[in-house]
Structure formats: C-alpha cells, structure tokens
Image: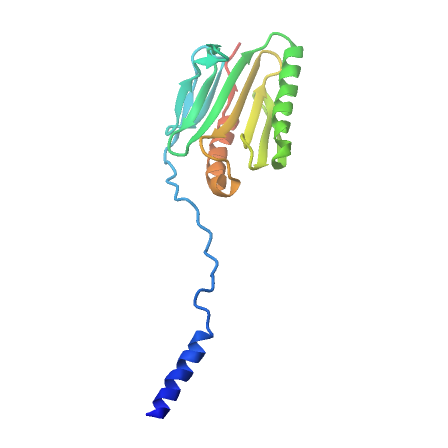
Amino acid sequence: MKNWFVVIIFFFAISSCTNYNESVPKPHGYPKVDYPNGSYKMVNPQECGFKFEIPDYVKIIKDSLYFDKAAPDCWFNIIYPKLKANLHCSYYPITNFKEIEKMGNDAFVLANKHTTKADFIDEIEIHKPNNVHGYAFSIEGNVASPFQFFLTDSTHHYFRGSLYFDTKTDIDSIGPVLNFVKTDIMHMINTFEWDAN
C-alpha cells in the first residue's frame, strides 16, 4: 500500500511542475467579408461631360450639400453598401489652364496631407490615348483616405475621386477590402472618357 501512495505522490509532484496556463499565441483572425459579385456597366451622369464603367453592385448618390450650400450638379458618391466604402467624386468645368494647374497642385497637397500617418504614398501617373490624364495616389498606412485620383483633359475638364471607409481605417483589417475596391476604381479610370465637346 505504501508503494501506491509513493507513486501517487510522485505523479502529483511531476504534474504540478507543468504549467497548464501557459499562453499560446492565437492565429491571426480576419473579419469575414462577403465580396459582391456583378458585372461592369457604363455610367454617363447627365450633363456632366464624362462617362465610365462601374460595377452594378454599387450605388451612385448625388451630393446634396457642400458647406451648407447646394452641391454642384456633378458631385456624387459611389457607395459600396456591403463593404462600407464611399468614393467621393467631384467634377469641375474648366475655363483656363491656371485653374487646371491649381486643382492639380491641390490634389497633390491633399494626398500629401496624409504623410504624417502614411507609411508610403505611391503616385501613379495616368496617360490614356483618349485625352485622359492625371494621377492616382495609393496611400499605404492607417490614413483617412487610402486612395485618391484626379483626371483632366488639360483644357475643359477636371474630375477628382477620394476613397473613404465608414469604419476605423486599420490597414490590417481593411487591406483585402481596399484591394478589392481599388480594382474597381482602376477599372473606372481605365474606362473613363470625356464626352465630345
């Protein structure tokens, strides 16, 4: 009987040396995202002077107010309801080169305002054969607007877009969604055309 007692004591002594509360790192978790499916369709906002293709799972909603005044007719938002993303779009008719130069400079200033939080800003030059030129700004890091762009014909038209998310902009969690939306925006840019003057 004493032998059993010694074996039991020995077993408890050894097992008490093992720390069962040792923390084990958990695997990375990402929120489940149901990406929308659809096809692209041509959109030609009435009397705005341009057209482009967007996916059929987004909504276009005209801006109603701009600093307590009525927003210009060709200001609108392209909304991704399932992904909580908004592409704010604004169009300006241009009468002279100085206006285009100022708006182009303003676009660089607005993109560079993110440098305090951005890890990197990739400036993508756009030159299309149908007289669509401009820049896209892919802004890496936890910033308010991770993708912006402007397009112009250098004589009559200026169009600008800025992407925002309706959630906290944590690049680790929104990264896959951002890449999905950027693909659609680049398709929009690649299919963008000015109406004949």
